[in-house]
Amino acid sequence: MVVLYRVDDRLIHGQVQTSWIREYQVNRIIVIDDKVINEPLTIQILKIAKPPHVDLVICGTDRAMGLLAKDAGQPNARTLVIFKTIATAAEMVKLGLDIKTMVIGPTSNKEGTVQMAKNTYFSPEEVEAARYLNDKKVDMNIQLLPSEPKISIGSVLEKM
Image (cartoon, rainbow, N blue to C red; front, side, top):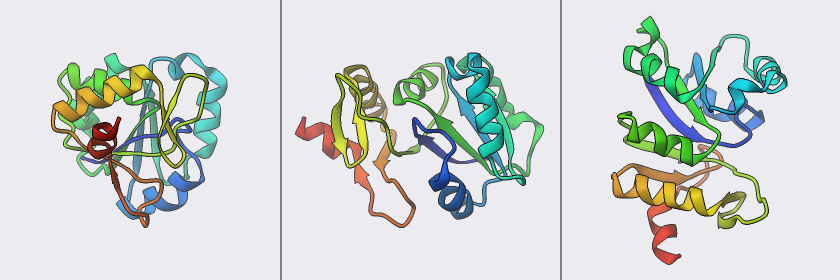
C-alpha cells in the first residue's frame, strides 16, 4: 500500500530518512524517474542512503505503473513513492495512476525556476504539471517535514 507520494529532487536524504520514513512507518521506497534509472552513481548513492530495514525499487514510469497496480506482490508493504520532479508525477497520473494526495518537498533553485515556497522552486514545465495535477484534484501540499505546516499548492498557483 502506498502511504505517501512525495516530490523531492534530492530523493532519499536526511529528512526522508529521519522524518518521513518514521512518520509513515515506511518499509519500501519506490523512486520513479526516467533519468535516474540511467545514472549508476545515483542508484548506488540511493542504495547506500536508504535505511537497512527499507526495500528500495528504482524504476522508470513504464515499470512503475505495473509495480503500483499490483503492489508488487507485497501486501504488507508501506510504500513511499518519490518522484524527482512534479512533471513525472503528472505523467504518472496521465498514465492512470490515482494519486489523491502528494507532499512536495525541497526542489532546487536552478536557472529559470520560480520560487513556490521556502526551498521549493519549479520550472515553467513543473508549474504546468502542478496546474494539471491541481485540475485533476490531487491534494498537493508543500511540506519539508511532517512537523511543519502545509502550504497548499493550489493557493500558491492562484497567486501566480
